[in-house]
Amino acid sequence: MIDFAGDLARLYSDPLGFTEEASYAPASGAPSIAIRVKRRAPDEVGDIRDTQIWTETTVFDVQCAEVAEPLAGDRVTVGAETFVVQGKPTRDSLRLVWRLDTRPA
Image 1: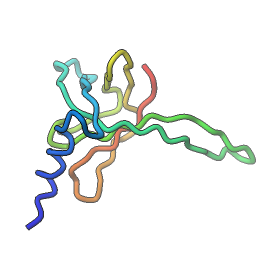
Image 2: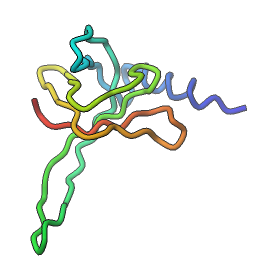
Image 3: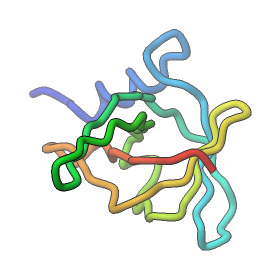
Image 4: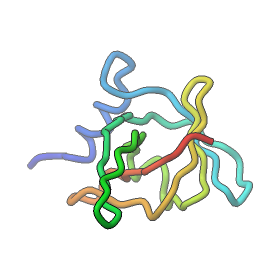
């Protein structure tokens, strides 16, 4: 049997892998926790009437096992950079990874 959750945990724990150390601070004021994130920075294009708007984005993938219920307003800090979660976080099809759309704090 395939252990997707176990395989994912091993990928996220590999310091030479595709993830970075970060801290997660809930907007509720609860203490920050140490997590590992996969950072993506896709360009997004949105349409407003007849105009297209191009924006840079920063998206973090984080294991659901590390952050049970992220909310808009929570903060992710990677090194000296802090980002605020915006919008409603979404999960992957296996419900193992949160996708956090963020903006600079």
